Structures are given as C-alpha cells and as structure tokens.
View 1 (cartoon, rainbow, N blue to C red):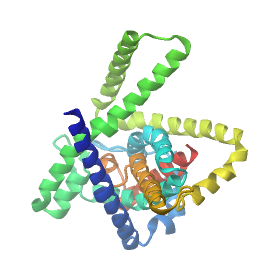
View 2 (view 1 turned 180 degrees about the vertical axis):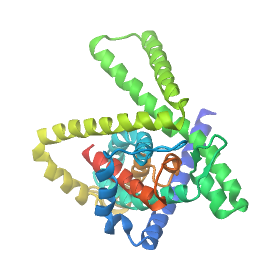
View 3 (view 1 turned 135 degrees about the vertical axis):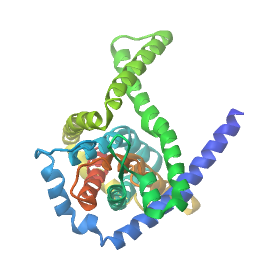
View 4 (view 1 turned 90 degrees about the vertical axis):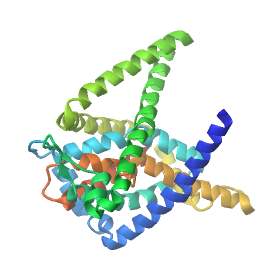
Length: 333
C-alpha cells in the first residue's frame, strides 16, 4: 500500500510540476513580459528606487490595511528561508551547477509574474465584514472573470490552504528542529526518546509563537514581519558574504561552472546527455518557483492588504521581492 501511495504521489508531483506548472510559468511569463513591454528590465532602476529606496521612509496605513513595506516583508517571510537554502542546494545536487543558471532565468520571468499577481490582487480586492482589505487569486478570479469562474477561485483557496501545511509549514519547522537537534548533539548527545521529547517541545513553542502573531490579525503580522525580515535577510547576506570572500579564489570558477554546465551538464553523451540537461533545466526552474513562489499566488494575498496609491505601485514590490529572494539571496547561497 505504501509503495502504491508513493507511486501515485510521485507521478502526480511529476505531472503537476513538469507538464503543467513549468510550461504555464514559462509561457505565461513570456506572454506577460511582452504585454508589459519587459517592465522588469526596462524599469528596473525605477522599481528599485520606488521600493528599496523608499523602504526606510516613514509609512502609515489606515484601518484594516498595512503599509507597502509590511506587505512585501510579509510576502518575503513566506519565501526567504528554507527555499533559499535547501532549495538552492537541492537544485545543484540534483541538477548540477547549471541549474543555478536556469534558476536565474526563471526568476527573471518570475518578476513579471509576481508583478502581475500583485497588480491584479490590488485591482480586484475588497473589504471583508471587519473592514479589512482582502484579496488574492480567489478574489481576482471571482471579481475579474465573473461568477462563472468562481469555482476556480474556490479550488485555489482549498488547495492553497492544504499546500500551506506542506510547503509553507512542515518543511520550515522540520528545518528549524533539525538545526536545533544538530546544535544540541554537538554539545550534549541525546537519546532517541529525549530527542523526540525535545522535538515536541520545540514544535509546541514554535506553534505558540506563530499563533500569537497570527491571532493578532493582519496588523500584527505586518508589524512583526517588518521588523524581523529585513534583520534576518541582512544577517544571512552578511554571513554568506563572509564565507564567499573567505574562498574568494573560487568565485570565478564557480560562475564558469554555472554557465558551462547550463547547456552541457556533464561529460556524458547520447541519450544520457539529454536526460542530464533536462534534469538541470527542470531542477533550476522548480527550485526557483519554490524559492520565490511566483505563479503560486500566495504572495498576492499578503500584498492585497497594502495601503497603496494604486495597483502598479504595489506591483513594483513584486518585482523587488523576486529579485531580492532569488537573484540576490539564492545566488549568495
């Protein structure tokens, strides 16, 4: 029975990622790039000036809303983390050095996809019974395409809620507990029963802390993310740069390997070369999506609560979000 379940889930995962999500992401990204005249490239300087350049200016938000900075840091809270570390490492381990090139390429398309998601989220958002702004794919499908498509929005909401347990929570908590276990074992080796008890305690503590934030509503989530995410990101970048410059002689060869292996993954020939190249491309694209979540629609839900001048202004934060998460932090990893 276990093998049947593994086969079914493995097949479903391959079909969903390889034959549905990736083609849709590539085709959709190219289409949106053409329709928006390559805004992620032509207006990149303007984007950085109006996102990163304004992040440290004092911002205010009205009732039921958060500031643009709080919205983007809340979205980054879901993307900066396990995907940048484990995802990048897994892409290299399973797809080779060249997977990083395809990870970058997917991020360039991911910028315009995330931009479009955020723009639509602001354009078609609405107020809930409490007066808070709510939005995301389920709302812009319902309000933008009409009631005939409402079932798609409902399906998204259901699957997104299920996905939160898997890609959004389980992998994060597992990584945290695993790191704590390794740190404890380095000083005080623990028996299996003691480790299980510690894991339970750590899990309950993490759940309690997250609960305190979530039950405070969008305002508290935004306030915590605004303080925690910039500090966490800058600290990670500093530590990564320390390691990189300690091995400065390897920087050049590393980039050579990335570009040389992007199209010729290894010293193999015939069909094996084609399979290896496919793995390089697929793992680069998959881990990019896992890292920045462009195309998944989850970040648009956080951005919908922003107190902003208009959809396009907030959409620029979507471009910045993918750039910071994948182009900067994944590259440093």
